Length: 233
Image (cartoon, rainbow, N blue to C red; front, side, top):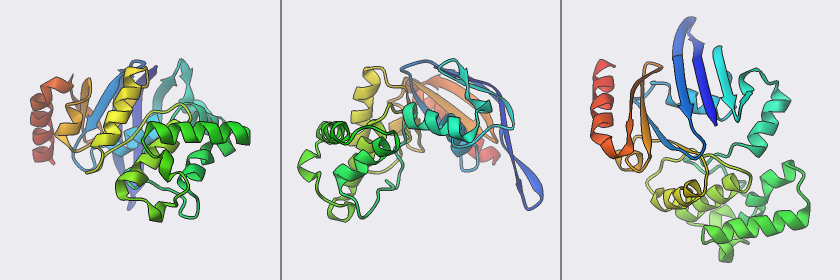
């Protein structure tokens, strides 16, 4: 599903180049559950932004479903984000004045889905995360966990992948993992070894490079690589 070839990304900070990613080569098969770890500044967020088509590499190619998306213009990238990629953010990003149901409907409005279908699909997604009784509540009337599940429902109402890391994320991960078992490709950026060990595979980044690849079940190897990377920093 995803193939990265020679991906590099450099930013200029204070007039100096900062190499956020350096020659990253990776294949993420359809339906894989992948965890990405690394110390602060290792390139995790930059990699996730490129995977989610929120940023472009300076060098290399990114193939998504057999298509080189690294060369698409902004309107084409917008369509990819709308129909192929979904995000679950740590801080929810719900619209305060909209109800939970309306927040879940929002991406379908931009996708041009008719109102009746939007309503039915949004209710179904809220039902899947146990929030149908709270559909008419605004974010300030929901608990932190309920806001997170609303954000999850919104992210997955159009064909999703994800980004999740929070103290209340265990239940959300269980929902995402059920979707992963049905074929969803799941990418998680985390600092939590307990979250990472649930993945099939773990990548550890340091200074923009992949320094470790291993099975989630062998989390101790990833922790050793992470510790070495932090000590190098």
